[in-house]
Structures are given as C-alpha cells and as structure tokens.
Amino acid sequence: MTENVKINRGLKGIYFERSGVSHIDGTKGELSYRGYSIHDLAANATFEEVCYLLIHGELPNTEQLSEFDAALKAARTLPPQIHDIIRATVDGHPMDVLRTAVSALAALEPASQETGEEAFIANGIRLTSQVPMIIAAHENIRNGRAPIAADPNLSHAANWLWMLKGEKPSEDAARLADVDFILHAEHGANASSFAARVTIGTEANLHGAIVTALSTLAGPAHGGAAEDVMKMVHEIGTPDKAADYVKAKRKNREAVTGFGHRVYRAEDPRARHMRGGVKKLGDEMGAPEWYEILQAVVDAMKPYARHGLNVNVDFYSGVIYQLHGIPMDLYVPIFAIGRMPGWIVQCVEQQRGNILIRPLTLYNGPEQRDWIDMQDR
Image (cartoon, rainbow, N blue to C red; front, side, top):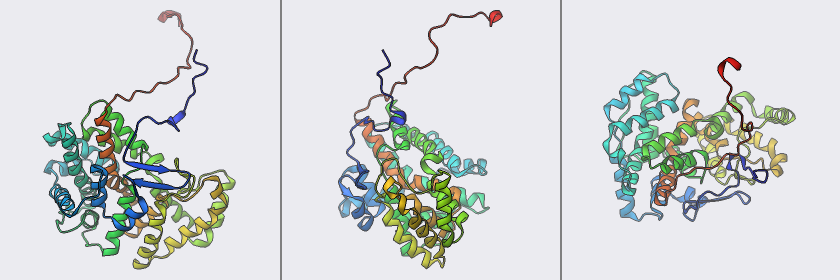
C-alpha cells in the first residue's frame, strides 16, 4: 500500500502554502519582494523602507516611513536584565547568546505574549531593533567594554555599526550595511522561515517563532556560508593561488564555498549588489586584496557555472564584515539582523490562515513484532 508513496526528502520541490511576500525564479536568477525587483530595492530603498514594504505590503509614503522609523528608534531599548543574561552567557557563541536573550525577552516583556496580528507587528518592530542591540552588547561585554547606547539620529544600519564599534561609520560603509540587510531581508520558505511558520502553526507567540528561526539559522548548512567564505579566503591567501585551490577542491569532489544555492541555477541576483560594494569598501579601508582573491575564485569557477555552481550573496558578505574588523562568529548573527522583517511577515502570513504544519514520514522499520519478556531477550 505504501510502495507508491513518493518521498521528497527535505520537502524539496514541495509547495506547502501560498505567499504574497517574495517571488524567486531560480532558473532566471530573479528575486522580488512584494512585486518589486531586488535590483530596484537594493539601488534605491533603505532597510527601513524594505521592512515596511515586507510587513505592510506597500512602499511607505513620507509620513508612513517617518512613523515607522520613529517606532523602530523608540524600540532601541533593552531591559537591564538582558545585560545580566549576556554577562552570564558571555563565553557562549553569539548565536546562542542571541537566542537566549530573545527567549528571555519573552519572559521580561508582557506584550510578547499577545498573539493578534497587530501585536505580532508591534512585537516584530521591537525585536527588529533589539536584535542588533543584543549582538552589539555581547560583543562589547565579552571584550571588557560597556554596551554602547543607541544613537537616535542614525539609521538602523548605521546605528548597528555605531553600537558595535563605537565609531560613526562613513556614509558608504553605512549604505553597504543597509544594502546587505536589504538583500537578506526575505527569501521565501528557507529553513529558518519555515521553522518559524511551524512554530506559529502551533499558535505560539512571535518571540517563540523567532527563537526557533534563530536556532535554525545557527546551523552551518543554512547561515554559515559567509563565515566559511572568509575562512576560504584566508586559506587561499593571495589571488594567484585561487585557481589551484579551486582545481584541488573540484578534483576531490569538494564544494567551493559561496557557489551554488538550493533554489538558484543562475547567479544569485543579490550577489551583484555586494560585489561592487566590497571593492569600494576594500579600497576605502586600504585592503583591496580581499576583493581580488574573491574575483580570482570567481574566475576559476566559471567553467562550472553550467552545472548551476554560480556565486551566491554570501560569497561577498563575509569580506564586508572582515573589512569592518568584525569577528567571524558574528557573521551569522548579522544575517539574523537583516532577516528579521522576513521572519516577521512569514509569521503574520502563517497566522492569517493558520493550520498546524504536520507532514508525514513513511515508516520503513520492522514489521509488527511480539513482546519479549526481559528474561528472554
């Protein structure tokens, strides 16, 4: 009876729900949010505008953006107990500290328990501002410094860099961080967004879903690409060694980090917007060699593009973080900063037509057996 059941491992190719948020055409290498091309958004929008677009469905007008920005800035606060929790877990991986702190916020802020759509959005806006604060506070505390207070005059991206480093970023550096967040803001039913939907399917609150998403993103198969690319760049060392590195990897049938994607057969459409920014920031920081190594790897990988091994967005992200002097173990938490609006709107969509997500597994164990008493085993 079960021999004709088709197993789609990893739910690959399975549509489990409809969504009006992001559209991905993996064959053509296209991505849009709410109908707007990622290319137009990366070139023209701010992260705040993209947050509003994803959550509310339309681009904001001046008044709407001003109100939304004010709400984000008003939420740049953390209960004092969160700093205590960070100190208690200071030696943990930043993703573990972030997940623990977000879970604690659910217990410290009564509004987190509300589960209506308006409450989801309000809690989401608050968490969008709090997540970068937690990451920056942990980085400062573990280095013996006091957490840096948010600057209400800075944008979301610029304030993140300020809280992390205690230095006002240049306009170009802040814009590149802004674009990085935009490019990571939403990407359909990826592992962490799907996991968040599963949590909401049980009628849990938003904080619980974000904790689930963070736990899923922490796995290296989902969120670890930028860190792995930077390790690869350090291993290669100089541009002239890139071709031999790629050749050795391919000969051993090993993956070259930063190439290929579960849904894209063409180049990841987000990658081009990071490429130019990496070059510009590298020149600004007096470290052009990182970009040169990356491009040497791209050149060496061109023969494999026909097999779908094209560069993805995370190929360039790690070098941006490296140029800012950001430790590698913060690369995945930075991904989480950008992905917050995507997680929020996926949760809102799940809640609107909620159904418990409960797929099946096909049993392939032993046939029915008789019980064996302990003395006879």
